[in-house]
Image (cartoon, rainbow, N blue to C red; front, top):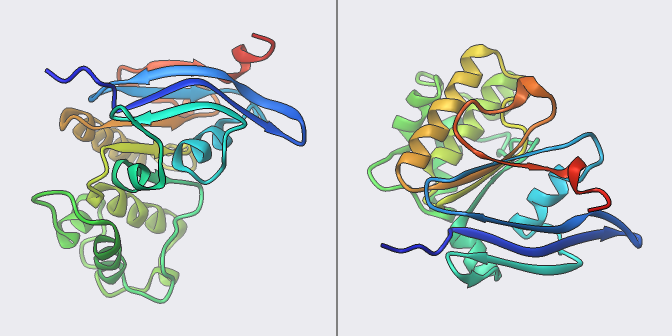
Length: 211
């Protein structure tokens, strides 16, 4: 059985203008594993996800995906990132948005854009442009794109924030299914009501200050 973690960090640090934002951090996430990153505003939660996604460069330390150094090629195959912004093409319909994403990033086996729209509650909105959707519907469309990604490591920046109970349950079900299929995920949360109820490792960035 392969024991190599899907995601591992060793002595990971990030500085901004000479000031430490976080680190050194070390963690290991196996297939089926979930890491919840918590901390106060300014503790570096979003910055950590951006470093893991390759959108920011760490000051020092190492990252590995399935034992491979975190190169651009490795990230393109292993990482799916869901940030605060939905990252949609505003003028494209819902189905076209998902088809375009699959064309660029690939598609999870045995899943289709149309089926993904049904999973997130957007069946019947196939031709509706993204700019005509409500904020909640745009979030659901972004979740459909995440579900279609073949990448095994999900990076989710406060995925429960600003969602009603039905939307939070949707995220919970999607996460649980992804972990059952041997994926892994890192999510950030702020406050006790934005955390996951699924079994998880915990990384509190506030507790890293001065460590």
